[in-house]
Length: 335
Ligand code: KG4
Ligand code: ZN
Image (tube, rainbow, N blue to C red; front, top):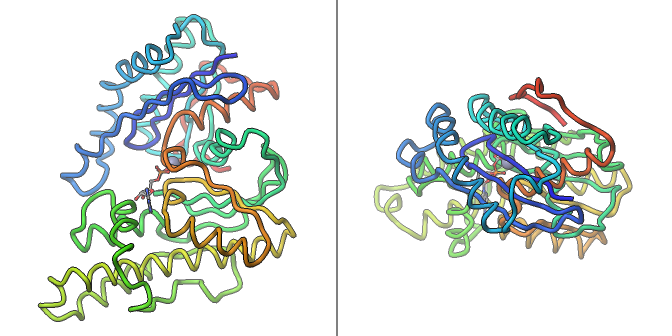
């Protein structure tokens, strides 16, 4: 069994090939980050045009890298949503064209479920029940995974997603784009205890998140810096390390509450922010102290990729699900 995965929900043009056991044969990610950097964020119209231009080359690179022809593929999977409509349309149009031209079955995949399934690429035998924490640029979601395919969302963000908060803080401080990986790196040189930021909803009895106030608190603290301090590298890295400390503390706190409510003893992470080294370290420590297991995909499988779409689509295909060529993108597709 050979599965082709296509992922274009945001600004990465991704195509992967995964076999029936979940082994990755190719996983090509063509990043548009250099184009969007000059605008300080993703420009949707530019992203969709770029997908159209890049996808044939990304496909060629995946097939030739794995030494596989299109005829040998058994299933075409593609991200249906959530994401940017124009970007989703490009991936779906490309997938439908391949499915029609080569008479292959087609399956639309939920991007968030894809992030959840990324763990199966590293741990093929991992089975629910567990709590999933999906933390990306667009989502912060705590999910009760009773079985693969059966989910109950326990909490989500009421404003900014965790990754979005990283990106906005980095942009405000002029640190670069995208901000998550930059703050991750810089924070290693900072003192996370220098400033204390209480997160929105942190102490409230809810599994929802709110990161927008935290971002504003960082902005306010910076604006109170003296002129010299604003130019001081150590003050800036202390500020971002303290911001990161708050994000990670909140994520860990709510995850522990979700474990208590469900009685589960395992946590699976996914999404771009799950690549964060401080989050990985603190979650692991939390698990060791409180007796729960923590599973992370390898960092390159946390951020957007098509291998996670392929393995998620494969699961649904084996359950008997098929989509017709009329399947439409859904920018607000929920779990
Ligand atoms: O999952 P993803 O690639 O795309 C979405 O579905 O949104 O996540 C992208 C987000 C961005 O906000 C990026 O800044 C953040 O993940 N990110 C990180 C790290 N690497 C990527 N955030 C914190 N630490 C990182 N190492
Ligand atoms: Zn994503």
